[in-house]
Image (cartoon, rainbow, N blue to C red):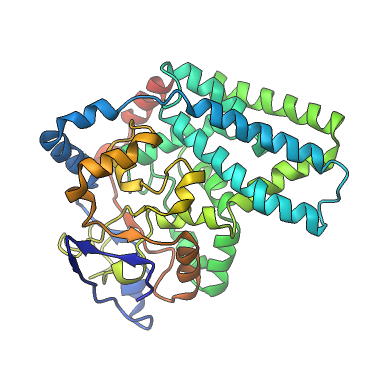
Length: 372
């Protein structure tokens, strides 16, 4: 048992038997395929039925924008400070890792909040502010993130629409020690590039504006501060999605790890695991790193109520404690990265997937229309 993930039911603690690392290939090398619906809609209905006051928690958080502007200003200030420092020096790399990666992880997750329209009342204001928030990332990102992330929420586990899921190719190539080290070091590339190979979204004027504004800012930055300042932005973005404590949330949120693993019964893509063996597919973390990541660790709570802002998620958990206390919890994002890499049972196959055949088609168009 790793100590990183526990499954608690009130005052009772228990674990699951997991298949050994030398189990047959058809048991280990396949995703958790299920015909069951994702659990968040059902739990949301149950919570609202028992605690209707939870509805009052929904809505945008007005003070978030001031914090975001502070983080953007911090990154610009550090970029200016490093304008004459070579990128491959200890000072540059240390500041990019300690300050830059932490700040840019907060930037990524601020864009996540904006994708749910949780900073302003009007969706267009959230989209435009996300383009501003994108500045320290160095490359256009915010406009593409929103529609892909909405697909992740609406079609969680869908092999064609949820681009948060690793592909079969990734599972085959990267489910070994070196592959997992590479994946953990370069997570940012997988999250940025994978969606383009899985499903396509409509290119809108918001995407164009995001590109034009970011390129304009980058040109201004290079002309006034120099290339080293631009490299600081890019390096900060890379390190934010690499071996950084805050990057642990990428793996911790939905991978089925360690004692929460359960044996796959067959290699039947339409459902290789029975409902009683289906593992939880969303995990929460309640540690101190939530302070710099907009409470993204409250991930079960977020998926249950995606329109509750980060400041209200702890209150949601407090109100509906009996719904959340029994769920598996991640105790350490650093520990998650470690155990994901070095425990043989933890691989890229450890995700719950659905074929979602009945969901394909027109709903993507509806989603695009709702985002404009």
